[in-house]
Length: 536
Image (cartoon, rainbow, N blue to C red; front, top):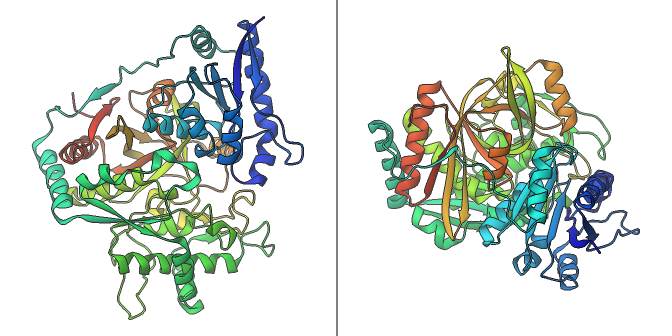
């Protein structure tokens, strides 16, 4: 009898998403099961397809507990993902599983399994649960099969990490070292407040920083309720909302509108988003927030349009003016860093980045993206692996080709956003960027930092990549220096990656150095990944 391997498929909390994505998941599972069988093992699904729901995903923490209670904890277990998944559904079961764990995703940008798997990996890392991870386009390639054979043979899968260097003792340029030190001291001396509109979005356990780890950085959470945001939106007048829309129209931003609320972006949805923009600034001002994160997807999705237009505007220095009820200008002339999906690791990073870039005289706009997908493409005659970094709309217009005039707002996909709302869609401008990710491992804050370039691809290739992912969302074509596809995937501890532009390669070295200095002065263990800078 063949050795048995358990298979689980974790999914979304939203029924519409699970139903829509199930055929892709089923196709991936069939290919994976066949690959396992060729190695002499038998994969058994640990939970059945639910005909009433129309999918075979674990779709809640309750269901996850039911499934894991019935499992043999000692058997090898594979979590296979072709979709976005809520890690909380299965994390409790994985934390007590005694057999080896393998996370697997299909190399596709469609729903996307890669993003879901990276979130689960980051969550397992934070929880201290050992795991191996693999990915494949069709589950027949040598890279995947070699890793699968190793794991089925009882060995952990290790990915190359020669691109990673500990940065805590690295010699840094003097000016950058002082800038980072001063930013860190200012945070720790004067403190800062991170406004969190409901914690724990979309099952992202890895996105929550425990208070005892956050406090030494000088940053503290103001836990806010999305119900308070909704209430504050009701206090914003239609005239005030219309002024925000008129400002955006005057900047040349386009809105792709229609009349069908269920499937199209409408003027009413946009005005509601404009009310949310003002309300978010008023609450941030009231509580003295230096950065804010709106969860949106659970809770607010049932009562109002999406928050993504709001988030992108907040992240931009040049943005529509908003005033308090007593007429004061709110955060005039500066961005209020917003961390999408209340990813607190990204929020801390965004706050530090904003202050470092400001001190260096660089444009301080920063945002996070999903590590969504990627494929080789010839850039200036040389084949490069070009990543698709893509998030649901919270990109600042300053990052886009043409700024506001290069942006278009399109309706969010109904299966994720039932009440619509527009994005800030555009193509990220070519140039040099610094990327980073703060994460929790071994009960400590750590960070990876690196350099990359954003490239401009032909319009037809951009459209192909949008069609393969989510065409309503802003896109960044990025080439990570000194890090290939599998090294980044094997190392990265999150579905999110923080990015900020710098004015050239020399500036990248300065910015990276200042971030390293700030992070290590704040007690964050830091790693420099890849190349593309003058640090050695």
